[in-house]
Every structure is written in C-alpha cells, then in structure tokens.
Image 1 (tube, each protein chain N blue to C red):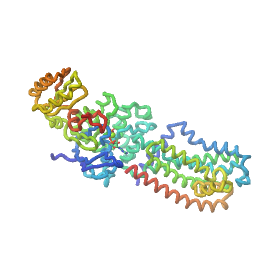
Image 2 (tube, chains in turn cyan, red):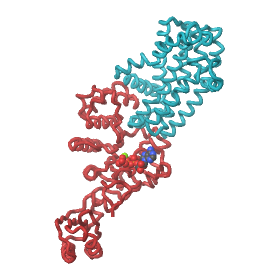
Image 3 (cartoon, each protein chain N blue to C red):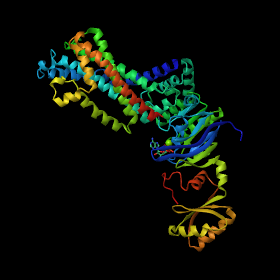
Image 4 (cartoon, rainbow over the protein chains, first blue to last red):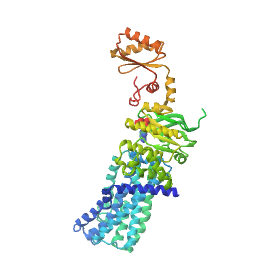
Length: 259
Length: 322
Ligand SMILES: Nc1ncnc2c1ncn2[C@@H]1O[C@H](COP(=O)(O)OP(=O)(O)OP(=O)(O)O)[C@@H](O)[C@H]1O
Ligand SMILES: [Mg+2]
C-alpha cells in the first residue's frame, strides 16, 4: 500500500512539474479560454438573450453553469493527451517496465486532471462573482459543484485515455476530439435551455450527460437548495453510471494496449 | 554447459494481426554474458525484447527470467530487469535528476538510497554537470546516457538494451561499449539488440542472428565464423556482363564452396585459398574477365550474416538479393 502511494505521488508530481516548467502554459491553464466564453459571450448576449427564456436574471448568470461544465468537458477530453505522447515516445514503456501497479499511471493522471479542473472551476466562479453572479447555495453549493464536476470529469478523462491508448496516431486523437466536443456543447443546456431548442435538438440533448450536469449546477448557482436538491440527487447516480461505462471502456483499451 | 541460465525462451511467437513478427524463437541466455540479437530493420528484435520485459504477451510459446514466467509472474520479472528502450524515452520537461528520482519512486527506493544511487549513476554516465537542466537541452548522446542511467537505476540482474548505439557518433558508441563491458565485469547479464555487425562482433559473447522473426544462427562470433568454414575471395571484375558466366563456371569446381554475385564482382567461399586461387584466375582468364581487384580474407561477421540470410544486413528487410 505504501508502495502504491509512493508510485502514485511520484507520477502525479511529474505532471505538476511538467506544467510548472512551461510558464506560459501554466498561465493559460489557469486563465483559460473558457473565461472568455463567460466574459464575452455572457456580456455579448446580455440583450440578445431573452430572460423569459433563460429563466435567469441575466445571460451571464445563466451561462456560468454552462461554462463551469464546459471547462470540465474540455479538461476531461484532453486529459489523455499527455499519456498519448508518453505512449508515442516510449516513456510509457519505461514506466510500465518498472514493478508498479498497472493502475498507478492512470490514477496519477486522474488526480492531476481533477485537481486542475477544480482550480479552474474556482477561478470561473470567482470571475463570475466579479460580474455579480454569486452562487445561491453558498460554499456548500460550491463544494457540490466541484463534486459534480469531478464525477463528470472522471468519465470524460477515461474516454480520453481510452482514445489515447487505442488511436494509431495523435492526429487521429485530435480529430476525434475536435469532432466530439462541439456537438457535446451545442446538444446540451450550456448555451440555451432545452425548452428553447428545436425539438430534435432538445431530444438529443436529453441523452447528453452534460445536460444532466448543467441542470444540477445551474440551480446551485441561480436558485438555491430547494430547487437544486432534486437535480443533485438525480445527477449523482447518472454520473456514477456514466463513469462506470467510461471506466470499463478505458480499462479495456488500456489492457489491450499494455498487455 | 553447466552455466546458470538467466533467460529461457521457448518456441516464442508473436503475431500482429496476420503478420508474424516473431516466429518460433527458442534460445537461452547465460548468467553474466552479453547476449546480442543481431538483425536488420523489422527482424523482430524489439518485439522479442518487449516480450521478455513483460510489455507484450506472446501469441504462443513462453519465456522466463531466472525461472519466472514473463506473463504469469510479470511483477517478479519486473523486479529483476532494467530496460533501455530503442526510442529516446525522455520527458523533455524534466531534468536528468528528476527522471532518476521518478524512477527511484517507481522502484520503491527510500529517499536516502535514491539520492545515493542517483549520484552514483550520474557520475557513471558522466552527466553530473548537466543533471539539473531540463532534458530538452540535452544532445542526442546525453539523452542516450540518461536513458542508460534510467535502465541501470534499479540495479537490475539483467539489463535489456534496445539498439543502444543507434545514431551515435563513434566516440559515444565506444563509450557505451565500455559501460556495457564494465557492467558485465560487475556480474550483470546484458541482452542487447543491434543491427551493427561490428558491435555484435566486438561486444557480444554470444549472439543470435534473426531475420524475418526466425533465428538463423546462434553462437559466439568466433564460433559462427569458424562454422562457416573456409575463407572468402572477393573479385572485382571489369566486364560486369560476364560476371554471371564466371559465377556458373566456378560454381562446380572442387575447391570452391559457394559463389555469390555482388554488384561488381563475386564473393567466393573457398576450402583453401592455395587450391582455389589458381582455378579462379585460370577460369577468369579463359572467359576473358579482366580482374580489377582481388581480395582475400578470413570470414567476417557480415559473411556469416550473408551465408545465413542470403543478404546483407544493410539491405532492406524482406528483399533478399541473390
Ligand atoms: N505494434 C505493432 N503493430 C503491428 N506490427 C508491428 C508492431 N510492432 C512491430 N510490428 C511489426 O513487426 C515486425 C518486427 O518489428 P520489430 O520492431 O520487432 O523489429 P526490429 O527488429 O526491432 O526492427 P528495428 O531494427 O527497425 O528496430 C515488423 O515487421 C514490424 O512492422
Ligand atoms: Mg527495434
């Protein structure tokens, strides 16, 4: 057990070191593009978006939940990239020829991605509050948002890792990634509520785990516990099921690639 | 032979889809020797190595390291081996020391043991001065040295080196040969792949020539050369269109073992040069072949390679030259 922990913490430290070596990339990781969505999109659509439709005091407060979950989405789907590069340049082989638990490398990646994602979500909520959006459910609500983000992120990271272990080249990886992420965003309640969507889109959006996550995060920010609680109670089992499916696929892909 | 066996490989096969990369390999590696897998690109050297270090599962057959099966007892095996991959498996953002620190944690060394071992290794591969610079600032040779230090970190009983000197300059190659000999002197078993004939010849105690996933010959370089029998006479001929005629005229002469055409002449393996040379000269004369250059040498490892695979090691795979 202590050996296991030694492996995981050393591998996690490696991801942290790598990030800290690239000063620019570190800066842009914290001040990420998602913030621009919040700031520019949020203010741009302030008057175009109908508050009757969004059911929110203003568009930026409506959008905040979407941006939080989009951050989780982007981080999760990109979470496997570093393992992909490790696979391609042989570093993964070096790690796996050591007497470590096969799961250590993967777990270290989960820990790192979840930590970075949580920090980013906090930055987003902080910036949102500069624009007057304060989570209605307070600190406990923020913790719940982080929990939902992590539950969703685990599944997404697992998908990303499964892809990293299965693709032939990193060109394929980035094509699939680009193909996957936009429909995930547009076919969800991130930018407009389901009720305002064309019928076929809202139908598809209902099956998108992202919609479930957003529908739980949004009342935590906008309304308060009484409205949020039923959604939160729903989203947790849904996310657990989502994670189970993704982890199953991820483990299979990993076994196939690593023997 | 009653030497202790370090590695036992038994009818090993590995298929990638319908392509058989390793076909029915069997061999043994003795403790304390430098064992080489010599073969051209695509011969199956790296695949064989990956099976031995537990990263690939064989399609059939098995391999064991000091009696531990590489599939069923993979974790035991991993505690006995060190591995230096063919690619420079380096994280550009980490310093040399951080590479070694990461690996010491993966081999579960204590902090004090790790620090001592890391300093030892940095000194050994002569990287002390550069230990705290990110690896992206390293030259190719420095990266290779770091690679080797990483492979040595667990102080393994067997070190696996995949093409350790590929693409290095002459000095760095000699340097690495020196390390390998020193490791052997310390009692380590070394298994390495190479497609350099001189490396196999000078460094390896025993080697297996593999081609197309099969072992074509196995033994010490000297044994392999002696087993070939006879010496080699190489002719360069002015009239290239007459080479084929000369080859067939010489082929069934008594003192001559085999005749092989090259691009500008013939390589003739002879029983004894005293008997063969007059015959060769006389036949060439009779057929009107002007001899531009004649050379005679004891069998070299490239002759061994050609004799067993039908081509030069530098020729691309799956394209035997007649
Ligand atoms: N992952 C893979 N998928 C499919 N085929 C593979 C894979 N890895 C290797 N091969 C094939 O197996 C054969 C043996 O490859 P291997 O890497 O073992 O050769 P090698 O002797 O190490 O060559 P080199 O000197 O170029 O390193 C080659 O034909 C190669 O194309
Ligand atoms: Mg190879």
